[in-house]
Length: 391
Ligand code: GDP
Image (cartoon, rainbow, N blue to C red; front, side, top):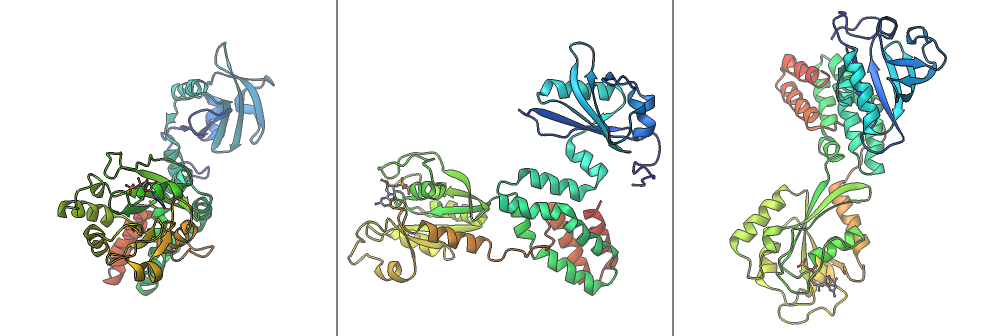
C-alpha cells in the first residue's frame, strides 16, 4: 500500500475510516477514532459539532483538547482532539447510543465505519492488528506481558529482519528460532487443553474443583450418575488451561468398552496434556489398567491419598509409593505439586525476555511455509511467505 507524507494511502478517493476504539459495553467513556487527513478533511467537512470555544473544528490546533456538543438537542457532550495529522479522537458518553449516533454522523460525513482490528490493520499493519487482538483476549497477566512485549515492535522487528534477508541459511536459522515458540505463542490466547481420565467415581470432578479452587461442578456419590461434561478454564502458574473430563469414560459405570476408550483416546489426542486418576482406596480394576495402557504419556495421580490405601493383591503399592503423584482433592494434599507438574509439562521453557514469538495460526503457518521453502533453497517462495505475514 503506498502512503503519502501524511501517512494516508495516496489517492484522494481513499475514504476516511472511523472506528469504536473502546470495548463495547458498560464504560464511563467511549472513544471513537477517525483516521483521516485531518488538515484537509476537517475544514471542508460539515460535522454536527459545536466547540465550546466557538471556533470551527477546522481551525482548532493539533493536539488541543476541544470540549463541545455533538448533534441537535439533546446533544452529546464530547471531547474531541486531533491527535496528529491523521488521527482524530472523539470521546463521548460510554453507552452504546452515544457512540452509535456519532459513528452514524461520521458515516454520513463520508467515513467508512470499521471494526478496530481493521483500523489497526490500515494504520499499522496486520501483524499489529493480530497482536492487539491477541492482547485483548489475554486472560492472565503473564500471557498479557508476553503479548505486550511482542506488540511493542518485537515481533515486527524480527519479521522485518526476515524480509530484508536474502541468505537462505540465515533465513532458515531465524525462521526456526521463531518457530521454536510457535506452539507456545498460539497458546497464549488458546488455553492449553488438559484432559482428566479415570473410571467413574475416581474423583475427576473433585480434582477439577480442587484445581479451580472453588466448587464449580457438582460432585455425586453415586458412580456413573449422569452429569454434564465438566469443562472449566483456569490458569496454572499464569498459563491459561482448559480442564475437562473425558466424556466417553463417564457415561456409565459398566466396564469400559473399547468404544469408550476410543472416544477418550480421541479427546486425549487433542489434549496438550492428560492426567489419569487412580483411586488408591479401592482395588485396581481392569479399567484402570486399560486406561494406563491407553495413555502411556499421562501424568498418573494416586488420588484420594487421604484414604488408607487399599492393600491386597490388586493394590498399586509400588507405583503409589514411587512413581505416581499422591493427591487428595479432599485435603488439598499434592495439589500444589500437581500444578507445578502441569505447568512444567505444558511450558517446559519460557521464552527469555526480548524473544520474538509468533502468536497466531496465520503467522505460524506462513512461517512454516517460509521455513520449508528455505530448506529446499527456494528463496522466492520463502520471501513470498514472509511477505504474506507482513501484508
Ligand atoms: P468422578 O466420577 O470421577 O467425577 O468423581 P467425583 O469427583 O464425583 O467423586 C466421587 C466421590 O469421591 C465423591 O464422593 C467425592 O467426595 C469422593 N472424592 C473425590 N476426591 C476425593 C479425595 O481426594 N478423597 C476422598 N476421600 N474422597 C474423594
